[in-house]
Length: 242
Ligand code: URA
Image (spheres, rainbow, N blue to C red):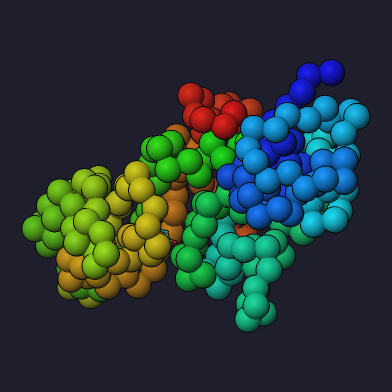
């Protein structure tokens, strides 16, 4: 039997991503054969060793799930909410595995959200150096100017951060409202909303339509589907963690 790293084993159990598993280990919440392990790099024998997280014995889940959801506005992308707001888990309750959101969308943002029970997949997607581009369609207030688009393309100050150059183009526009397509390779909190606000055009609606080469397509709002093998490959090829 091949020995595997403790954090990889925990990630494969579907509890959390590998990075979060490392945190659990560091905090002393993981035991191997009854003894707390807090240093990184410990390898275990999945067939012989007993691994506990917070006192519960864990086993890797055999079947891996990779799902895309067309998230409606008004749902949060966590597995539970202190304020009792609807979570995306309610829309995927017919998936009989402990999947969780891979990445996040704001409560009021809709569109493409990935979910999985594979911690290594989550790790590969969320890795900051992973450089997966994400594309959004934003409806903004007013007729957006060419100079605002130019600013988005060269980078804007969003308060605590200066954004890297983005791809941005006008899809349509009237005096009342414009539609903008914007692609970014980073993911600060409410980044697209703050970028458009910074150039003078508050967002009315925001929808993510693409992650890497994977597109939302015509999946109806509130519905999910399994990712195709080719889509999983496109998302993880050459990424750390897989
Ligand atoms: N940018 C935002 O402003 N919101 C999201 O949900 C995602 C990207």
